[in-house]
Length: 464
Image (cartoon, rainbow, N blue to C red; front, side):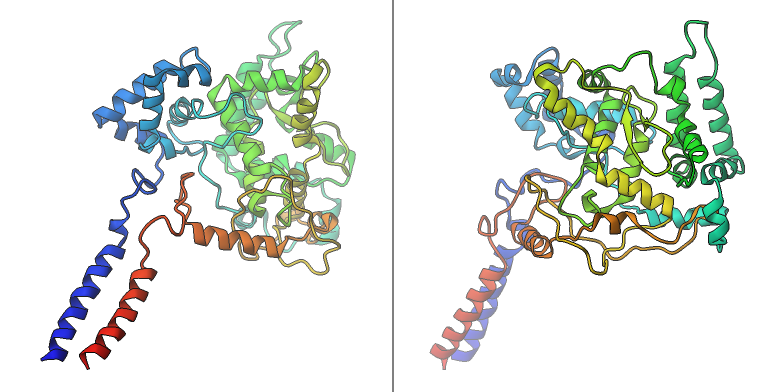
């Protein structure tokens, strides 16, 4: 009888503690309002369907009109609206590059996030969803039209940029959109106006947004062995119309003009997010993803911030927007920092070289020369992906050796990587948000289970 009562007691205690340890019991402020991220157009629809969210969103938009952040937050009604919207789907929403309603999505995103920033930030978070594809994926697609098994001797002597143009002409969509922007960007308006830059930029955006990257990347990042090839590469975007001007504006002024346009602002923020040099990765690229960096670079073409190769050198890869830091005054240091993100960016340089060589990052290099130093700002680095080196040839444009990573001589700091991974596992960062649940901030399944085991043993001894 005693054993039967003890068994019933244990069963009841087990069920009670399990219910307390279940995820549904975590109703604290850490999880309140958490949602899986959705695109901002859909998030806006969800907000509009809820009266409280809808009214607060209208209030916030009125608050942001013509006010800076400090002025806005001084108003209690504006501050309350912002706090409510931080718990809505709008706060975590993101956009997809090239989506049907991309501009509308970005307008919604910035209508929230411009009110969250402390003035003008040097680096802004990207409003776009993270890129998960890699260069090796593009090489597999490119091999469909390029063929495989090219003679390395013939390949080394080929004009890879010319080969890329020929490959584009074999694809109807690529040929059509390339012919369109060439025609528009070469059309002289008057003796004093060589082209309509606005229309040229629009045609370039359509080309790089609508043509698959296995075609556009070959034209933009083709490897060159001589000056003629490098000049063709530089001429890809018709720089006399889309890039160059009579005078070079100040780079910070150019950035300010770009940030007045939601689309340009988003592309620049995405470039910084995916190409910003990192000293904690093997390749100097965030998450060691060359594809994300190259895609972000191509995404800026067709805007005032359009970058391009500065010369026709086949050996040195230097790209830059059409700007300088003359006249920066006391902002010269910030201007030079902005410009170096293009002209002296090891991530971007390595990514361009890797594509030209037909290789993706190999995360297990042999005998690296030195260990990379840590960057001043500790970034949240995702765990490194598996080895994605791909030996698939890219027609005549493939060189089977990858020198860019070896030349850098970088090595990831494994102890730091492991430490950061352990931190992420033990702090439970909610996906798509900045909220963190500390290990001891809520009920834990481990503690009730341990308590149940100890209590069960104690009661069993008493029963016996």
